[in-house]
Length: 295
Ligand SMILES: Nc1ncnc2c1ncn2[C@@H]1O[C@H](COP(=O)(O)OP(=O)(O)OP(=O)(O)O)[C@@H](O)[C@H]1O
Image (cartoon, rainbow, N blue to C red; front, side, top):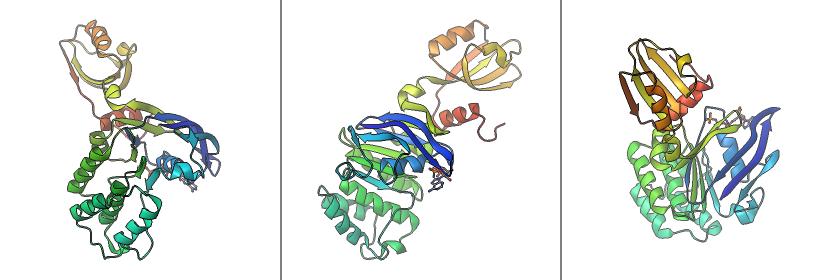
């Protein structure tokens, strides 16, 4: 279990993380999302024990991660700009990681090197961006660390490789492995994550089990005989509201049966509930906060 407790981090007097509290259960694949500059990479660097919280703590199974080799040996972090020795080949990187991770599985390594068709004698600096990612994934899958942290995980990967990577993660994940993935590609994240958190203004504004949250946010299309305004629905937790004459499209948080009961009091002539996806949840949450430009 990872516990992020009341974490503060600022740069140049600007609070990037502000009393951040999140718990991530063991065995979960947690999607870390948020607008540009929200602090996702900053949080991943803190989780990796590279940088230090100004206040608060980050505990892995109860132990503080910062400069703690006992905890850090169980963590593998793939940043959005993976680091390699300048002239190293993937095999040389494999030898390097072998010394740090005794559980390194050579068979798994070779399987993914072959699957991704990675040239083993070419320096990694001469790989394409996507190939560099694949190389890191081959190494990560062979290590199967207890905690895998991925920044902008799908960046640079073609659709076939994304699928291969998602399949591979699903194959190796168990209750002893926890994965945190930051990405702006929410459709990809939705396929792979079982929980997620939206980082915004230094805090986690929405977090938890993906299915529970999806079960609690509803896209509703409703039509009435006469025109109704948003104010009529002030009893509901409305995230988004768009009206076209007598037809209203709204996104509402809460128990769907209670929402429907409430809406039926207005005698709708049509009421339909549609599922929401992670991308929509993110957009609606941001829309409510006035982030970005919307119609
Ligand atoms: N070393 C640093 N020095 C000064 N400011 C920093 C430093 N690292 C991060 N920041 C600032 O912290 C904020 C959060 O940056 P961060 O890279 O964590 O965001 P992010 O959510 O990963 O963004 P993106 O989605 O755009 O990659 C930004 O305003 C950034 O400029």
